[in-house]
Image 1 (cartoon, rainbow, N blue to C red):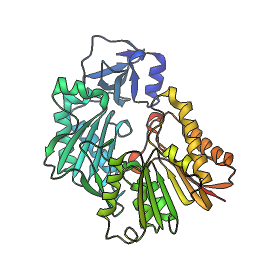
Image 2: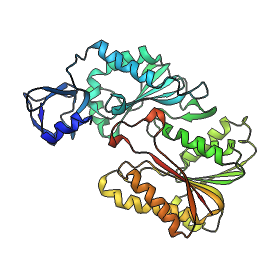
Image 3: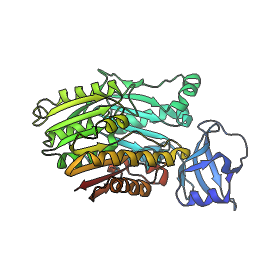
Image 4: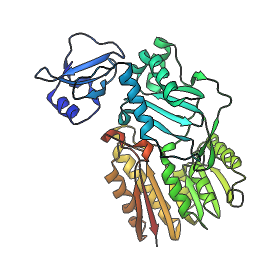
Amino acid sequence: MRVTAAAERALRGGHPWVFADSVRDANRPGQLGELAVIFDREDRFLAIGLHDPDSPLAVRVLHTGKPVQLDDAWWRNRWLQTRQARKGLFDEGTTGYRCIYGESDGFPGLVLDRYGETFVLKLYTAAWLPRLESVMAHLIEVFRPGSVVLRLSRNIQELVQQKFGHCDGQLLFGALARNPVIFLESGLRFEADVVRGQKTGFFLDQRENRQRVEALASGREVLNAFSFSGGFSLYAARGGARSVTDIDISRHALDAAKRNFALNHDIAGLSSGRHEVVQADTFEWLEQNERKRFGMIILDPPSMARRETERAGAIQAYGRLASRAAMMLGKGGVLVAASCSAHVTTAEFFEAVPAAVRQARRSFEVMETTGHSADHAARFPEANYLKCIFLRVS
């Protein structure tokens, strides 16, 4: 393949994607999952990657720079590098974390998460399917899983089923004794629905922010909005919160939160504090309960901008949430606001939330702003989606 001048510059700068409209020509039509070799205008090797002829991302780059042979030894070394990159990050109290974060770990369109002895392989491109046997061989050799579950991005499920005979939630290796599976995070027990749950079964990326919440929760009445399965709530309860209220529109999520609390009944704090669940639309609930007061409010909604055209509306929505929450915080209360919308930039989010708190006529201090956890380290702009801000109001 040869690509446009702009695409050449992007590749030399380390960007891992070649868009279909950036391809100038190819010596022949490529097949799904085939290796595409890209040459520059001087006929010098530029990059090599996985070809996906039916995707807007025509090539997902595996290597740039000097030519290399992508043989079995090269692949094995890349797998070993990802394991080495997580070495020392977690002790025995954490058995749930990300082992491979797609392009940022040199595996474009592939994510590998661990939940105890169960590993979840999530694919965002069908280009990996022709080499799934090789992927599984290296995964088993390097990580020694008890079982491996395949999860597929929604947009490729039908193609993968028809062309390769694999389906979302399929067990690829080992035996799954139970689902949801139980894993540890910072000494807390959680369940993860690895077969049907969102993403790969749990939101591992908020681990470090949950730890920060625990450190700030003592003696507070805590509201966890968009609570999902109660991750922030368990940390707050262990941190000494007087009460924790979970709000989510999904009864299934709230039931999972109850089960997670039950899994940790023997841990100090989780049985002594009050835990309440409310099934409601968070926007409506905040508006209808503006006279309630809390010592900490956590806002961690699902992505509000799945495409660029939704960006402006998402920023406004984050602002409305933050403004409502700020009015419900008592003196010295803490607002924790997070965004997982990649189309909303870090700068935009960290500007929108304080502006909304000012609009609510609350003075405040920004305690801390955070980004990705170490096992989700982002190596290129599009991978940098998570941001969180901690404010104390007065």
